[in-house]
Image (cartoon, rainbow, N blue to C red):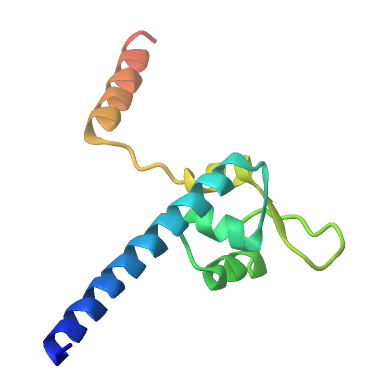
Length: 109
């Protein structure tokens, strides 16, 4: 076997490894989305952020979590979803509809 064949095989193996890593990540995400109570690692996967970022959010009390034994952090999936959907940015159509509703309510007074 020559050097070029080895490089081709190595490249193919790396592609397959990347594929399997992505598949494993997708499976972890699917499993996490089925559980109601998540560990810190599972919550980070569910949110699509690093564990370090999630630790910072808990440290600054920017996200709700539970510590039943004072040590391990747990997260309720429904609360994570609420946290993800906070600070909604309205579309132009929603802003226009809200403005029209306000103007209509003032016109009827």
